[in-house]
Length: 212
Image (cartoon, rainbow, N blue to C red; front, side):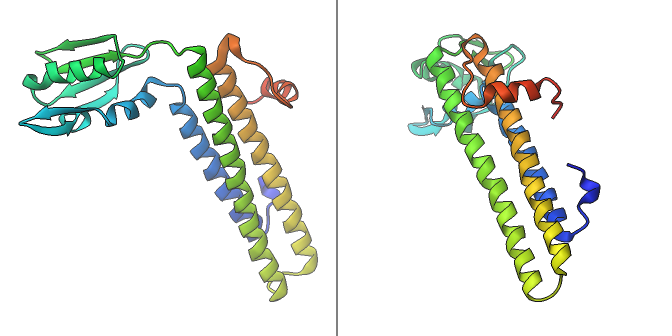
C-alpha cells in the first residue's frame, strides 16, 4: 500500500489509527511467553505482615531478571525475605534464590510445558481476533464518516469512491501485517511443536521477506 495515494482525510485517519493498532499489537506480543508475563502470577500472592495480609507486590518491586526467563524481586525489608521466598515456593515456583544483603529474591521460571505452549498459542489466537476486530472497527468508523460526508456533500462522489477503495486497501494491508506478526510469534513460541494452520503455509512464504 502506498500511503502517498491516501489523499482523502477519511483513509488518512483510518491509516493512522490502524498503525497505532499494529504498534499496540507489537507491544502485546513482546510480553507473550516472556518471563515478564509471569509477574501477573505474583500479584495475587500474600504474606502476613504485622498480622495483616499484604500482597507480595506491595512489599517488593518486581522486574525482569538478568538471567533468561527470570524475575527479580527487590524486597523493601530484609525481615520479609523468608516470608516472600516461602510464599513464592508454595505458589509452585521451585527455583527461588535470595540475597539478604542485596534484598533481592530471584525466581527462574521453568521452561514451558507443551500444555503451557498450547495455552500461549490460544492466547495468540485471541490477540489475533481482537486485532482484526479493532482494525475492522476503525474502518467502519471512517466509512461512517465518509457516508455522512457524501450525504452532506462535503465530498464528491468520485472522490468518495477512491476513499472507499483506500479504506479497503488499508484494512487488507494491516490485517496481513497483523497475521504475519502473529504467525512469526507463534513459530517463535512453539518452536519444534509448531504446526501450520489454515493459510499458514501461504503466509510463511510472505514471512521470508517481512520486516515488520
